[in-house]
Amino acid sequence: MEVNGSGGCPAMAFRYNGTLCACNPGRYLVKGSCALFETGGDWMVSSGVSPAPTFLTTVLPIDDIKRFTQSQAVLLEATLVLLLVWLAFCLALRFTRVDNGRSFWFRLRWWISRFDTFYDTKHWLDDNKVVIKRKTELGGTFSVASWILFVGLLSALLYQIITKWSIEVHRVRPANAPDLLSFVNDLEFNITTISSMSCSHLRGLDSLVIGTVGSIDYRVYPLSTYVEYNCQNTSSGPTISLKCNSCQIPRRNHYISWQFVDLPNDPAIAVGFRFNLSAKDHADGKHVSFVTGTMISDTYTNDEPKTFRGSDVNVLRIHLFPQVYNNLNNLKLIQPLFHDFISGSSFSEASDLQASLQGSKNGLVNTTLFISYLSDYIVEINKENMMGIVGFLADVGGLYAISLAIFLFFLVQFEARIIKLRHEDTAMRNIVGQKHAQKN
Image (tube, rainbow, N blue to C red):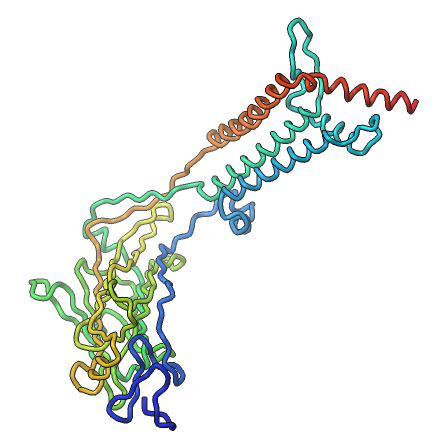
């Protein structure tokens, strides 16, 4: 860009060749100002295959449940809070006035005793006494507490079953040529060079290299014979698109290279790269696997902002994994994965970048896409259920028994150590009987 009307450069920029301005390393020109480019942690990898729906997922609002609970811990914490609130409420009732059975609080205590559905056979059994059915306030308290605990544990169990009904099993087997030729996928690769450049800077995007340089399988082909390619100008910089329909990828490495070169008063500089690579079965376009991300540099010891410029190549390495989904009618999908980014020539100091811009040497941004097809093995994927109906019923029965046993233990301990509690049902019935007698 040229020096502005006031004779200076924008903020975070410097002057070179007398009349031109360039942004500091790590910044690029956006609407007349130098903006710092940050990745924002937007790496994503997806297999493109969502879990198959089950009966529970079709009946229940699973997405809403997950949004409000997030995990089993939330359900268990809510159960514990509700349980403590109930026990505290029943304890507080015991300190209220009886008033000969006429008070509201005594009526609440009486109705709590009627809730004694689990422990009403005989709480305290003395020797030589007949077992009689009776209901107590303590038994009603612990019966409701048992229900609260059981419902809470059952909710956590159902949540676990819904979210982890089945597991994805991966098996690796050796691949042969017929198996690999059956993988027919549509591939699309897009990469944006983050900069103020345009497609007019682009050079050299016209050939495809297969094999390793210097080996007997080294070949160079016109790029157009394998893929459709084009360049589009965007607000973030030039975007190169590569598309291949019904691809049957040979079992060798692929290299595609291109450069952005200096134009008069418009140098070739970049601050980063944003890319995405997607694959889908040509016969089944419902599932799309992809990898997408943003790259600045592979230098982990120096986090200073950098600007890419120079002859050293920026290499983006991608691995392609052949995968067969046996649970989806033998869907054959290639999974792309980001392997590595090797940064090329770059500058982190404004003085070094200024010296490079003022000379004609190394006036380019050199980039290579390296695709490796890992074809020695094929990953077979299937779904296996974690739990059947018998296991589910066994878990429910176990939770029910545990809920009853816990509070039965507390009930026995209370009545064993506090003699007054052994006869509280008689005391409450006497109060209620006296109240009825007074009415009559």
